[in-house]
Length: 436
Image 1 (cartoon, rainbow, N blue to C red):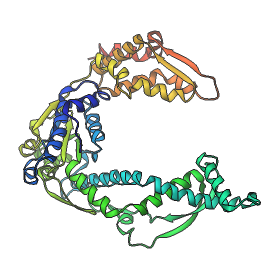
Image 2 (image 1 turned 120 degrees about the vertical axis):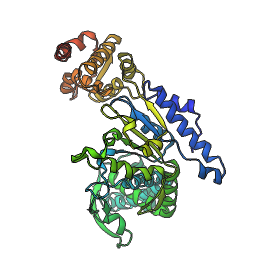
Image 3 (image 1 turned 180 degrees about the horizontal axis):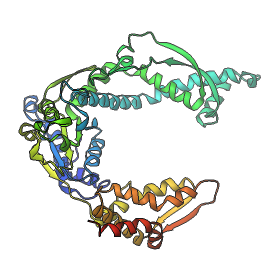
């Protein structure tokens, strides 16, 4: 369980997300309260439920990213769902309980990956022995008078050095049953995963590279070393106690039922979500899951509807309302330069593969930020996503012409380069100022 203080959580989020201090504070407190709750007696823990959050703000300002980074920070099971894909009971579409089933699947995957890392050394040693045996059989003509143990030890050393990574070998691998999904009324049933354990384990011979074979055998050996029952028990517990569900586009189901037409089930979806958020027990193929202590973070732009348009019972289950601010030119400058995964850094790394050393001057960053802010003001505001549009246009020529065995070339993007390559975009932006 996470032991970071709310201030430390906000500092971690600041590495990836610019601004939105109110939202960061709200989620940091919610996360810390989980840790505080875990330190109480069992009787007290049962009484304290998470304070769910509604984030209100335009697209592209960081709502999803805040929730995603928060979950990564504490390795909590996290899923993002769209409220619009659920329908009221009786209509064709996904039922709201499927979000809990998806969270459990995410938790199972998370715990399994952790357990596989724990046994990776043992599984790797077993995989190495199997591949050395195959290589030894393939190369027995090269052994000569060398003792088999010495020859195998030499092969193992060469294998670790990567000498045989691309060598094609034939090995026996487990033939996994094919998955088949039936979707009656939105409920998804994976036949392969339900009956997989009951079916006899068959093996088949496959030809693949040593690198692929090593990964395949490591996975198979890890599966043998992991206790599935303990994985399931831990995953269910983690989903219940640490799970985070991010419900996006909740404003799209905020309409009233009397609107009629295609939106007839909007309020019905809200009423179906209500028991999940309030706390109920959902049956999954791994067992029953209580939703009482799952943290729900809802988000929406709320341009047309308001938070008050949600049914009162649902509003009551989201006591914390946080408004995220639109991004300014200064925010765009920070987004382009400050985060660990800043867009300029991402493009620099991508183009370095083709021997291009990409540099941005300060005035170029200012100009890109100004153009992005103006475009958001004069057309649809899409927040930080606008930077991706602008950067793609800006670097289109460089990205297209890069590639091949050229020596490293340094390319400096300055204000002049930005103005020249975004001339058409700037003209359209200026014209839109005068269009009513």
